[in-house]
Length: 212
Image: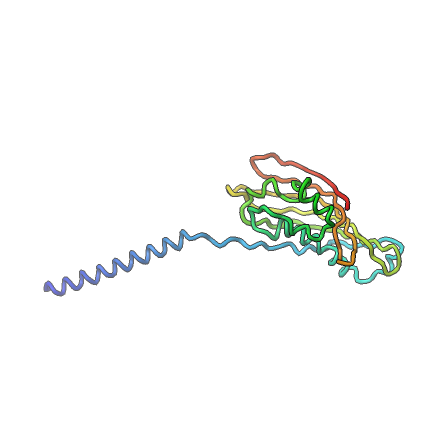
């Protein structure tokens, strides 16, 4: 093999080596890239059971439609505190826009530990997902053609992870009074219980209530 041929082969092999090294660097950079943040899935709260009580109960039509309207402010509440946001989270105000002012204020201040996961929200990483959800809607009709308020019982379990990878579960047993108004259905009072299972803290149960 003459010298010129040998030099051309060396140059070609050198070029191939540089290209291979560049490709390996690109692949390594891609493997270290940050995975996309998970997108909150929301809740889409639906009635497991609907019943109508009161003197006008027999005249109430379209119970499923009414129940969906009643659940709308509660769906917004759960999405704004648990299932429709990305953690860590600091602000939960939008979740209470369809609560009466008095009840919303109590939920965001004196009872924020109950009505939001505020005590652990800075430690939750990513999103929470609903694992189990049931809801019962009891509509009150005092007279034919009238629907004035409803009681809604919700039971749910949320699952997620903390910033160190440890699992977290949030259990809720809630009861709401929802009232009809010219602006739509609004939450007028609640009685809620919450249990948060997250290490290293022990499980804890909190309860509270507030009327409008």
